[in-house]
Amino acid sequence: MIRRPFGLAVAQMGPVHRADSRASAVARLLALMTEAASRGARLVVFPELALTTFFPRYWLEDGEALDHFYEREMPGPETRVLFERARDLGIGFTLGFAELTPRGERFNTQILVDAQGRIVGRYRKIHLPGHADHKPTAPFQHLEKRYFQVGNEGFRAWSAMDARIGMCICNDRRWPETFRVLGLQSAEIVTLGFSTPSVNIHWSEPPHLRMFHHLLTLQSGAYQNALWVAAAAKAGLEDGFHMIGGSVIVSPSGEIMAQSQSEDDEVIFVNADLAVGDRFRQNVFNFAAHRRPEHYGLILERTGAGAPLGDAPSGGAS
Image (cartoon, rainbow, N blue to C red; front, side, top):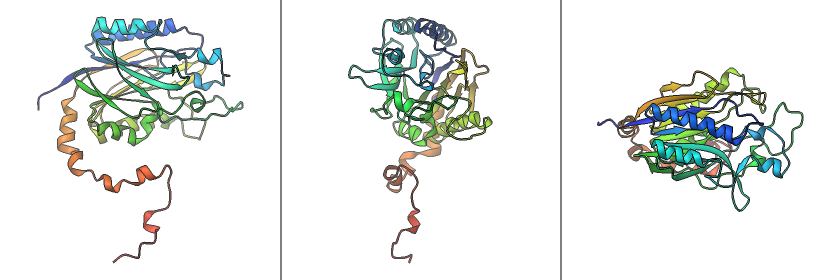
């Protein structure tokens, strides 16, 4: 099978503090983009909410203080230079940010921009974690359900830059359905921006399992769907709250091909062979020949776990 090399980069960001300006965040993104292009990348992946601090950790009242964290247009006056630099360098990128639509809708959003600086895809986060109520005694809050609506455009893949690319954000990686739906669209690369805290305030998960589970979800999603997965973290101590980092590029075999070595701004790169995914899809999984969706009905019928189907009255076994 003929190789299909694709320069794939992930740009991890260290902390973006609440006091940092958009301009300073954009300047860092420009430096990371330039480095990725110098290493031969055709696409560079930026983190979730890359332009601001991870503001869902704070209880904020509606109004100017909250609206400050959202982008009303993309590109806008402060972000247009990213699109111009991408066009000049001939590199595509994905970017995570808080979106405020003209109708007042708020989404945790990621866009796909091609090497001509054109937006060719948009994804709005579907699996929103956390809570919407105020928890003043918590060490920090996770208010995505307060500040964002559930994404309304589904999981989609796009043909761009000689590849098929899908997107997801942070908590989406913990659902196998995310990768399966994209894999069934023949996606070859899935990009993920994330900002994962070191401590889970909702349950007593041992801290050492945070990175293990993060990598487990990406490696299994890549392997089970014959995908390249490129995951970009916001990392380090942001306004006193630690995020695990762990930016990574995973091959369709499930192997980690590159991983960040710091909690600072850092570019990792792989000259990914998209033909590896072709071989897995055709010779290992062959979904078209072997999937049996007629037996997967519970995935659509149930949100949470229910009774075993074997316990239902059926007239007995013959």
